[in-house]
Length: 384
Ligand SMILES: Cc1cc2nc3c(=O)[nH]c(=O)nc-3n(C[C@H](O)[C@H](O)[C@H](O)COP(=O)(O)OP(=O)(O)OC[C@H]3O[C@@H](n4cnc5c(N)ncnc54)[C@H](O)[C@@H]3O)c2cc1C
Image (tube, rainbow, N blue to C red; front, side, top):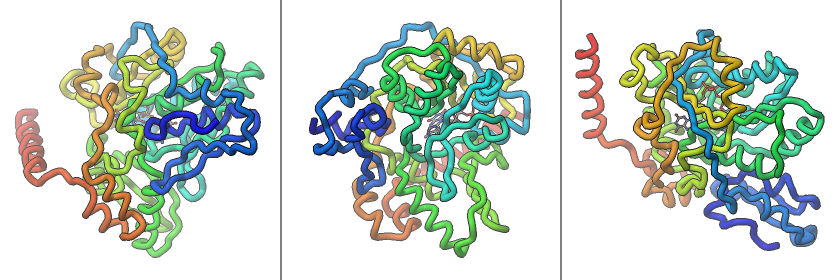
């Protein structure tokens, strides 16, 4: 076996890595900081399992008539500690109450992002909150299978490609497996993230980092900030001013496959999809207090069952499918690559992070910023 799937399409889901019976698939980090499978020919027995489970080589379809809600968690503390409406923590608690386990993205001690699992409610906080970096799956799919084979409930959460990778790896359906994905803008490079952290540490004189939030709501939910708690000092900048978020939202540092995402369809194979309910002030004004509102899409019977378990702990209104396409185009459309993408990566090892971003990230023009500001002022006046 030489290659598994086209490198420009490989989403890095790790299904091939987890399935290989001879550990012949190694996940090697490339020059941009993303992991790709490479086959060790000495170990490979040409069984073809890696190709069989590759979700990129499949075309799954889900015919379930989806349901859409605008929703938020009534517990204000849980909601404020979450990226949007704080739905994930409720789903996680529901599964833990059934003596299950919950998988999701967490930080390690160096603030690299990787998938892990929790078995105790006090640990959910590790998985809570969006981390805008590609999370390394490692051998978590094998762990999921071990739990399911022991008849234990599992909630697996992640991006759509990670859910597809898991389902492909498992081959068969398990009654006790629940999956939740996200509407995903795309995943930034772990190398770019590391470079940003090194830059911040230098500015803060190598102080220890205690905590990081990509979605601090101190200003508001829509004007969220990146907040880094150092030992005794705090860095906080809104997403339009933070250098890492500028590179992320300008599509300069996403994985190659994100620019042509295989999983951007008008269906999902997860049970539940979570996202921010952008546009909520127009569509469901009663649901917007700027503390975070989620868009929830129910994609299966199991998803509905799980939703029914938590809905009494939420405020919600039934919404409409068209709203997703209108206000959250990332549901069906891939990000468009920044024209400075190649130059950004060519210079990543040559420049300080701030200079790199200022030079090679396409910023929103002053003219567009002015229009946006004027629009906001008019809106505020009309709202009074
Ligand atoms: C890389 C990325 C891109 C996103 N892009 C969009 C977008 O374009 N539009 C939109 O509306 N919403 C997007 N989201 C989703 C949004 O940010 C919230 O995560 C979502 O609304 C859930 O919020 P919550 O308040 O219910 O729970 P939270 O507690 O905020 O979310 C926790 C959930 O996010 C998962 N998660 C966190 N980081 C990662 C990661 N790196 N990889 C995989 N899973 C992760 C956890 O496993 C858990 O399931 C994105 C999320 C990520 C991670």
